[in-house]
Length: 330
Image (tube, rainbow, N blue to C red):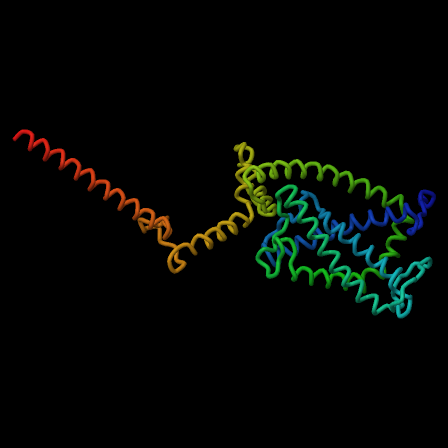
């Protein structure tokens, strides 16, 4: 039996290298677990089919990876700077080197930490959404149909969900995180191999996805719309054969996947336009004057009257000329 213990590298979790590796582990775990959660959520609650929910092709959602890192950071800071060490449950795994410098007991620190997680995750979601919409004109998710949403990026419902996630993490996951990170840091010969494979695949995936996103972004900016990336990916998977035959396929699918932005602008324009008509009722297309407003109708009547008057004046002048010719002959 081969002994691999000599390959073990023991790294303290609270050391600079240990901290970096800990957040790297959390990012990878969060990205993968978030990808699984999104697949199940969309399959059960929203799209009712199996779809890849991420910007990347592989099993990774970086937003959830950063989210898990943020959860861990908030919890660590709450323990260190808010909690005074009183009332911590026995099942909580607290580092022996932890120094409590706060003035709140565990229950009070829990309330503050969970609220901070809800706010922090909402802000992270908003920043990520803004970066993609403003930078790439791509919408990775859409809450436009939910009440109280802001730009379709964040909404009260998902902020409440983040609060629930924060509570679950604080009470049921955080107590064991330090133990897991210590295990990873003390078994680097295994973890390094896994990290290398995952990060290598992730790097290739990121480059490929950015190239596709840049192409879609160029089309979106040219046509001044925002692309719903989930719809675009759905169309992409359905038309792989057609894609090879048609060079303009990506542009066509990007236009088909354009988000509700154009529709909203159209609805707003319609509401403004209908207030120009009598009774706020738009005329039907069968109406000969369907594109006319009261103002344009009045202008048309005035122009018509002017034309009639000028016609009458022309006829009068012609009659006078004819009469003069007749008189001269006489």
